[in-house]
Amino acid sequence: MTIALARPAARPLVAAWRQALVALGLVAVAILIAFHRDLAGMAHIWWTSTTFGHCLFIGPVVAWLVWIRRRELAQVQPQAWWPGLAIVATGGFGWLLGDAAGVAFARQLGLVMMLQGAVVTLLGGNVARGLLFPLCYAVFLVPFGEIFEPPLQQVTVAIVLPLLHLCGVPAAVDGVLIHAGRYYFEVAEACSGAKFVIAMLAYGVLVANLCFTSWRRRAWFMLACLIVPVLANGVRAFGTIYAAHLTSVEQATGFDHIVYGWLFFGLTMALVMAIGWRWFDRAPDAPAFDPVTLSAPLRHRIALAPAAALVLLTAGLFAGWSAAIAERTAILPAQIDLPTVPGWRRVPLSLHAPWQPHYPGADHHLLGRYVNRSGEAVDLAIAVFASQREGKKLGAFGTGVLREGDVWLRVANVPGFAGGTAMRITAPGPVERIVATWYRAGGVVTGDDRIVKLATLKARMLGGDQAAVAIHVSAEGKAARHAIDDFLKDLGPIDRVADDVTAPR
Image (tube, rainbow, N blue to C red; front, side):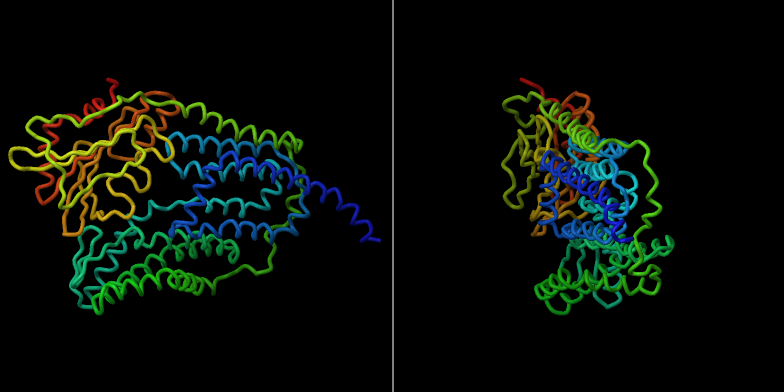
């Protein structure tokens, strides 16, 4: 008798779930189609970047986390809930800001937040509480963490150098270059260990949720997930350099690529799990949540169809706003020329160690070499954009002083000139040069690409000067700073140079 009565009682709940999931699926597909550029951008990074290859697994993991909650979720009533629209609006506004400033991370995070908001709005607050961890874990779909690379490069150098000295290998460091024995080694961004720290962060959060209930133990485990990969990467880098010292750089790096690509992360994961295993305090079959606690009636409910329409309308509002400001652009002269600098004359570019910055989307791009009476030689490069957007902006990955796969390598950042930034780079030879950099965006001259993004955001959202300019002054050799200083004195203010190349003729 009990079983016969339970089936009819469960039918309304099953029907409610079916309708809610259909609506959610249709809304999610519509959002992904509307913002397909950002979805494609994320997918491209997942597939091509070794740093973010782990993101390919986040989607299946989120689906699995929902699946293991299916029995508990089946006992919770899905109810459309209009306060969830605040999450959609927050994600949409963040996406708009990222689109205006040319920040891919903000756009991609905004897209994920809009999808999270759609779940909360269409399934309701009670279901969202049951799905809280999978919803939050979806943030790891967004590629982030490049900011960790420079400091981790320095940490790797700090680990490697004492170990080499301990083993009797003569070694010295110059920025991110290590001279050890017969060879020079670059501690590049790919060798910084950032890729494994980022992946271990995602892995650690998952394990901390599934295997611990104590927040203190979760915190200690997460600390191990961050520290162990950094130390292990330092030891790996040392082992590669030491092996090259004993054999050859070809044999050492070949072995390193195999170990680094296939075994290192697995061994690091195993080590972290071994450290935390003893303190696991959550049973493997423990329920993710108690559905009884999520059975209270919701306030601020709304019918499912209007809720779906409002989600799409809210997301579409920001897409439309972006389209409305996308046409803003500056009127540039049809042709621009490098400035005439008193006391300096134009000469052919260097063929010994050619260098030029990389701005594939620039509307104008100029490069020239100047020499003064003392024989000092300086290169001046200028890139001009009528407006900035995806694929055509200052400060994009692989653009600027160094391009991806460049023969020139960054050695270190050095003190800048007149409000700009400067970098010391090297190429085979060896040849060294200093490159000073300034950007002008939204009427602001700076060397900081973060300020560039804020100035671009202000200009795109509120109107104003849409033109953007990158100016690089570079010189080779030990007297490079002196040559750049002399050139800048005669060149005049950087903002005036930017004005001259953007002013309509």
